[in-house]
Image 1: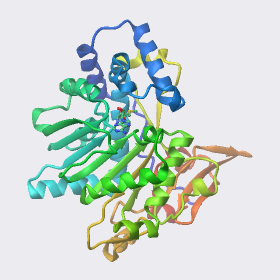
Image 2: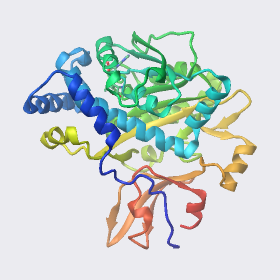
Image 3: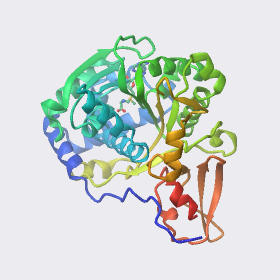
Image 4: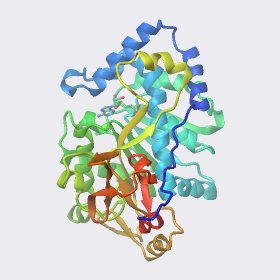
Length: 397
Ligand SMILES: C[S@@+](CC[C@H](N)C(=O)[O-])C[C@H]1O[C@@H](n2cnc3c(N)ncnc32)[C@H](O)[C@@H]1O
């Protein structure tokens, strides 16, 4: 196998000065707490967020202590995660740049809907990416958390009045939300697993169709979920349902899968073949004002993990089958390699050692398979979980 540079795009950041500044500003804006109290609060909330749902109070985000802990620690962490994920998706597909370009051309700022917004983590992440500003609409069944976060938006180093053309907060259960607005981006950040307390995957798929209908043609629906086996596999089941031909015929639209699935994968191989689940990792650098708090937590948070699904609403004249856009021109561009959306395989496992050889699972058109690296120092061995491999790189493997 030829030696070749593979997409190790994300280097581990040693420090992240912008996030560091934000956390510093935020610390100044929140009530003073002893370090031990901060640690206790974050650990308790982390237990709620990761424990059996039946043990978590229904409206846990209305709890004052939980709100404060979320703002201190999970808000910057979640925003960093969504920001990194959105950047990776954009590097591969250019979808955000296309939306930004469309909005510059039309002079109409993009409309963004943050569903189950909590402290506006996803809005904040997108605010950093859409520097020309956007209209935000955020909904959650608990309004008070969003209001608390809204008051603290000015702690963001990248916050400027002009970044936000409008910001509407609304108390609403996403299952009952109705609007006349149409959106360029809709984000569900770590919300669906909470809805599974009460809903089946089939019912959730019907709710998601309603949100696909709220997208403008070409718009993006981004769903993030915790990287747990249960939440990730539920998301893969939802994905399989949504791109199923009969389902698409029934709803009269065929959404295109932007990420994480590389191309035409009808049934997620992780549900079919492997006893695992598909998630991505992003390194979270050193954030000095959080260092002591992070050291005191009972878990290692240097590697952030997330499962996700990014769907694009096709234009009326575009056709897609099994979640893949069938379009001669984009297919040609993809093959010529002048379009960055040429991801043909995704790394869907960590680095595995099998009898002194390094292995990684790759997911491609042919499904997922185990790939043995002849050279253990090959860039593929070091690439982050979730990185995409392009045609050029694929050909040299
Ligand atoms: C884990 S928090 C995530 C918050 C935020 N999106 C983030 O990524 O930081 C989940 C949020 O979903 C909200 N939520 C759960 N079920 C909901 C529903 N049916 N309708 C609206 N919001 C809901 C909760 O109130 C909570 O704020």
